[in-house]
Length: 202
Image (tube, rainbow, N blue to C red; front, side, top):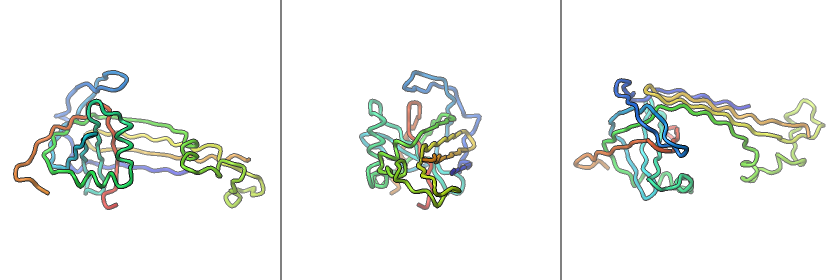
């Protein structure tokens, strides 16, 4: 069992008084949302697939990156593009510093995944087969055991103050450069987007 907990305030918090009601255009249909507003000078990337920028948490130790696919661009295409080796760092070298007008929805998400098939697809086959050897981990080492399931549950809340999230993974074993004039950019997350929480130094 492995657990992770994260809680951090924004370096520059959103003002609750500036939060407005609006509409989030989800794939399943439009839904009401509360949008937080802030203007900050940030690095901004825009290419043929997506626009991307970030917000720092306190002391700039962690960042939340927002990746917004352009209208008509499939989310899977964006995921493949940024997952390619070296692509994430390369795209930021092409960014610019701009005055970004953020419009970010308050949101809470919860997910639960069974990771067994994903791990097998990545090449982790033996752990799920009778050839597995977990005898050093078991109180009855002479009984053959395999991993029967890998479950991950996660939750995240994003609001004006910051973000709070948790993730638990359970492995079940069964016996068997600055411009002269600052550009202004409106960055409105009112349709499906990606986000990443990253540690700043690494």
